[in-house]
Length: 69
Image (cartoon, rainbow, N blue to C red; front, side, top):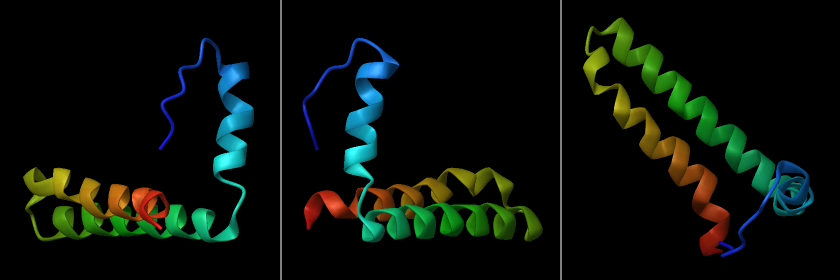
């Protein structure tokens, strides 16, 4: 992860695109997002909606995985 500080969105955007240029990174972000959505849906269906913060775990785990490669 970078320690960069951005003063505007226009400064941040090229950095963001560079960080998400690899297909594996995009795939992991997609997998994490889909897993989080599936968990939220499952928790609502089984009536345990109050556990919804657990959906953040796989969402962030998949998204942050490339940092540790």
